Image 1: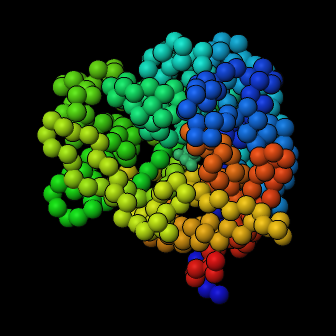
Image 2: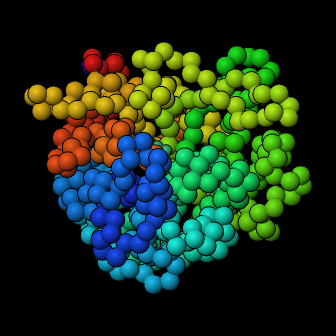
Image 3: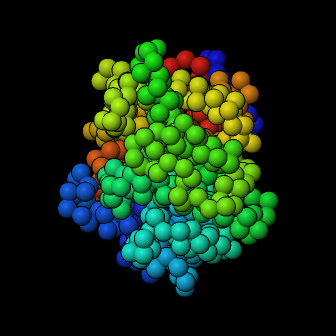
Length: 461
Ligand code: FCB
């Protein structure tokens, strides 16, 4: 069978985040996070459930590490729960919280898995939210202190550090759309939040470099491949708008030290920003934000196809148009669009030249559960994985410096506002017994990781 090879030393991993898998929400001195508070809000979570137990990874991590080792993986991306390290978000560090991550990192290294740590995957301590959260510039300094505490403890062993996961989601879903914690609906605030996230990233970078000499430091962004529905001017402008709001609003400050002028003008027109200088930017901010990075973490799930902007005065964010037939959608309603990954990577390489890229998330929600034989036949996930890995291999062959791939997710877990209704795992998790069952896709992924190559033909479902 012909295969597409990956570079030697390529990292094959799986990803999780603290809030989605750890559980033990009230153990080991952990404080309350904005997601604990949000999940307790009636109607906020589709199945009405919370993450107090989640996948119980806090207790079962040795089993999960052994699972990854058995799958032939050599890397694991996880996040640190800030409220476990600083229950009140600032001041005293909870040593029991740091001890947990210390043991996890040692366990990973013993199993031959490289730890890739994300400091912020959205679970801000509630005590900081009570003082304004990411809308307050004080949270920037608090994050830098937190980054210092974690990297002082783990910096001797962790070789990859990301500051934030998907600032767009935290800013926009959390502060503009209100469907994520902290559940606010204020577009102007969301832009301020985005800036503070970027600034806290920039200010944490030198701290991480100091405390983890020689480690790679980066940030993880969510991206989609953006396309106009037709070649008409209105559709093309809508695509430009969305690319600006979703992709370039983060890429341009990080890689060019400026916000994209056209996207700023859009926000002024929408009344989300005053004309003139951005009110939340102070001298020196953009220089800090654009400090050189060792890697860009790319989370890719789908493309967005955009139709024309609503008319002047009645502006609303353009909507994504579903071009795909239902069978081409995952259970999130996201279109399976592997070639978008290749196109996106070529574009990021062409326009921004990140020194190195990791695919820090890519995956699909499909609901398959163990059958009578106890096996999970998730052929759709295998198809998704194979298609995206082939697209990735093509991008690498074309010169994009991608050094690793982390599938989202290792485990079926707490999918934010969807609760446990969406299953992204390579490994099925029974919500009652916590029993872990690797799916067929996990076996497929093991074969890929072991061969360091993906089959060039679609596997049969
Ligand atoms: C990403 C998040 C991750 C997970 C996947 C499905 O946006 O970073 O936590 O929810 O989507």
